[in-house]
Image (cartoon, rainbow, N blue to C red; front, side, top):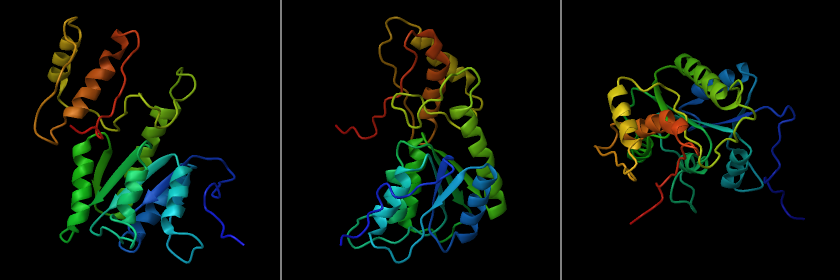
Length: 244
């Protein structure tokens, strides 16, 4: 008799939106509980992968959980997590990668004087990507409030816009990413970009600057404001995987 497969086996009978919680287990046990509580208070379903005896590999299980989740919440502190013998990265990093296409909310605990260099690498990539929302926190209580607020904002923007008709599919290709926080004191740069976009001869505009200064965030803000000036609006094209 063949072993059961986790594919398609994870269901929630209430059909509520499912929020996948990713973190190392022991060092962030209190934080995982706080996030799960915040999710339940919003009448959503927290999805947590826990280790233990399974009839199938852990990666198959958390991949199945992720495939049936709508939102990804990542919590990071000091540990990078376990790397399975057949893997080159930890399950923690793998979960983040597999969640591409979902709205991803990232929370980083501070201080972290003994953070694993591998986790530092992952977090640096997140910060440089700029298309993912991330926040810092210090206590489980603070994290609870941040997650509750951010999820409420995210759901309002993506699923409950008055007069918007049917809500767009999560991760729909081409839609502009929706940052959770406002862009502060960049009105001049946005106006300059919009002026360039209005010039008929401007076929390509490049925003340059050091990594992490907010180039992508600025471009998204300008595109969102300028979208109504074009018949087909504005489209997001992710070139992160393109190499010379």
